[in-house]
Image (spheres, rainbow, N blue to C red):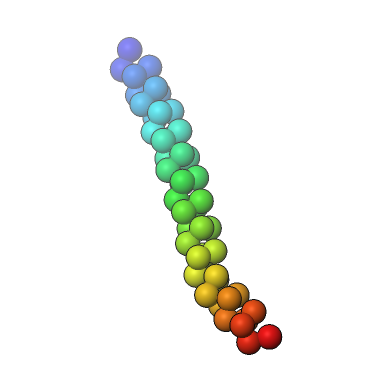
Length: 47
């Protein structure tokens, strides 16, 4: 009984961690994109 509960909790936590990691990764990618935008705009303005 306890083992079943522990397994379920571990699986749930693993899934939540994966979702959180995915969300954090997407956020980081978009932040990197926003950081590069001024440089791209500046580069386009200079050319």
